[in-house]
Every structure is written in C-alpha cells, then in structure tokens.
Image (tube, rainbow, N blue to C red; front, side, top):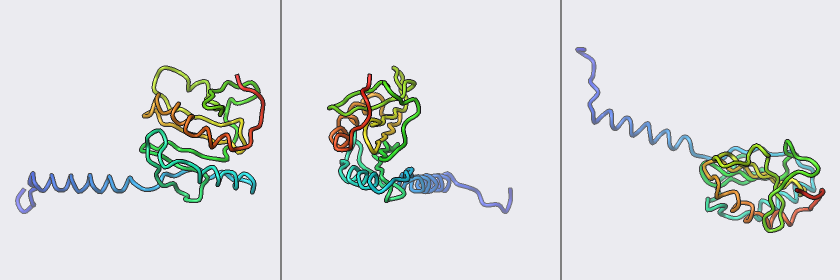
Length: 166
C-alpha cells in the first residue's frame, strides 16, 4: 500500500528478538509459594528447617520465593518447592504407605506411583511440623530419591509423631 511503511526482514528479526528478550525477562522472578498459618512453635521449627536447607537440591540451584518470609524454598526451573508447616495430605491416615530414606518417612499419594512421568508430592507426614516437597514431572524419576535422601537429616530433626507406615 502506498504511504505505509514496509516491514523489512531485518526489522522483523529485531522486533522478534526484542519480544523474545522481553518475554524471557518478564517470566523471571521469585517463585510464588503458599505461606501456611503457623503457631509460634511450628514457625520456629520451620524457620530452623528452612535455614538448614541446602543451596542445591537434586542438582538444582535454590531460587528466590515470594513471600520471602514464607517457610519455603524453591529449586530450579520448573521449581521443586519445599514447604514447611503444611496440612495433612489427602489420603493420609493410620497405616498409610510410605517410602523411607535414611530413616525419614515420606508419604506419596497412591495415584502418583507408576512408571510414567508425573509430578510427585512427598510429605514428611509423620513429622511435626509437616514438610511437603512438590517435584515437577520434568525431574521424574531421579529427583525423588535424591530429594528424600538430601532432606532426611533435616526432617529427622523435626518432632516425630504418629504410628508406623506400611
């Protein structure tokens, strides 16, 4: 059309690069996490737990979380999220099955067991306060055992409650 500027290939390429860069930087930032409502004793225990978390988990570097004072940490992209002070997981109860790593007991919902990549939710449900770790399916299956083993010493420092697991 006459009088209308033409978009050259070079200009289009520059524009696409700019949009890509803008999109990449806009997606960054802290990982949003839930901040459980904790009583004073659980808040103190969770603060100690979070302070003791490693700089890397399952070979993923720790990243910032929002709110910054939440009893939680995140690692990698997509983030593996560790939260202290969570509620009892759905499906958990007396005689629940568990996975044991270095004497720490972890509950995994039955529907997350299998031979296909899936998100895994680990809960140290026999500890108080409870700790939950959500591992995105991108890390399946290797990260599960690594996370359980790495966090076991910290979980064992929490108060152990409840009965046995199957």
